[in-house]
Image (tube, rainbow, N blue to C red; front, side):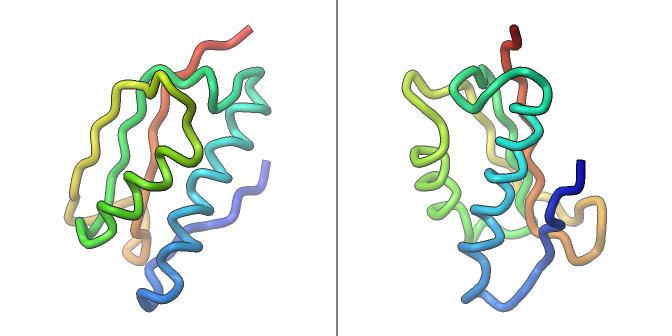
Length: 94
């Protein structure tokens, strides 16, 4: 499955890229026989906490109550030097 890569760009593009991370997560979950509604734990890695508020809002938009356990962590770097977000999720399947 080809997913859109998330890279660091000027801040006006950050909301789109952060949303794209959730769209990518949704595609992976559906392909694996699950969905965003079945997520039980999520860890979000950000290269800058300046996006914290937007991530919290997106989490409410994309994930359903009761919300999964979650952790948001600022990291120095991710899988690629230009990456700004990575989402790791555990979801029920079947």
